[in-house]
Image (tube, rainbow, N blue to C red; front, side, top):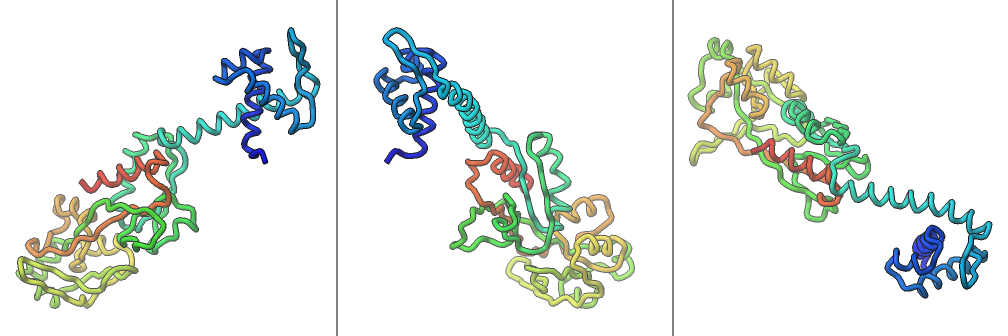
Length: 298
């Protein structure tokens, strides 16, 4: 049985024969033998059960069916060529809609403020950024990529790459520290006003380490929220000590609005991963966005 996709080959051969007015010229154009071209046209006519060409030893002409088929063949072959070019361009030129999802704070404080540089570099990419606090099924909800803090299980059909990592810092306003005093050790945290984030995938305890020492506290919150911006504002306004990611507070520390507390005591880094459905090399927009996001961690 002849494969159905052979029809496009037969159509292309007929199109060349009709345009060139010669089996020989069509064969040269297609890199085929004249007998193969003649055989292809016969196969097409047999499959259609219609004569497309009137042939003599000296010339050839289109039948009514041949003219009708040629007009439609031109349109279909043109559309096929355009489709193939568009698909090829997707792997070489960054363009089209890119749907992205990530945690709200990461997007609000770290990624979104820098997206204008990506857009300027790749103006043909349309960005759709969705911020949320839950793990999203990117296949079910139609996202191209998700930025997560949770590593994929080995059995996942998705692709993943680590982008970088972030650390948290204990911070408070100068006004708060003037009123309540500086901290010299993490044990003193229990006697201070603590501003605590409560959300999914976040451990309730604060763990700090210095050299071989480890200190862990279950913070007793005087103010808690599932929104990091609210905690940042509370810290800046002198309500207490907050444990916030570096990208939220570094500029505030530099400006003198917040003070880094216990700077010698570190916290474990929170890794960030890009999770996506298709291989990077098959989508220029996806590959460029992953590279751009990873560069933000450098």
